[in-house]
Image 1 (cartoon, rainbow, N blue to C red):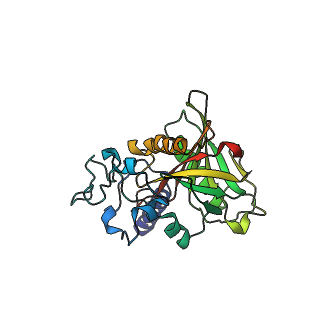
Image 2 (image 1 turned 90 degrees about the horizontal axis):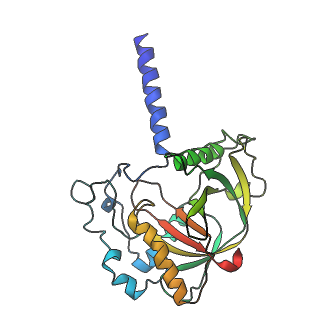
Image 3 (image 1 turned 30 degrees about the horizontal axis):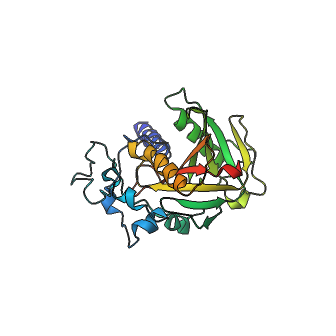
Length: 275
């Protein structure tokens, strides 16, 4: 009997850890290894970002690259958390998409510096609303999408890869305040033409049209103060090139597993002509 309790206890621990592996993690989640342990490779800053940075942004001390000295010998960043608060080179999108399926998009030539331009192809995405009044709203939305992909909450019980990026779509009012938010995950190409239906009303499959996107990459986390500043830098770069983004939508995209090694976050604005 005692052996049975031991086995059941080990099973419970395993299931708990499985849930932890797929959590929508906060910035306080422990970084599982020092960022320096993940090989940076030979890519340049321009290759990592996906665009040429503006000279004035490079000269800004708040935008400096602290990859080499941000983490000490214990693997803890200077802010006391277990990830880098300051920016480091993001993981290149091309490197990510060479190793796993990504949404279909074309890279377009940008008119100037400081941003990448993409044409995102029409496609089906799993979608759910985020309850912004709940402290765990984003985590709960993430779990709903994950359960759809795992087969628990779709009508065919199909197990689909949970692909990157995880996209947060914010709808803004005239004052730039957030009105509502959605969480989106791209449906694998294998299921694009006939995706399974969700069995819960909180999750649905939505076909989004082509979007022309303007993007800045960031090597930290959504919660880092410098990440939000990427939207201001992006707007400034677009204004220089006389480009008007749609003012009532803001997107963020997380391409990498939160808390594990080199990150790639993107701050995204949509071309006004595509709305």
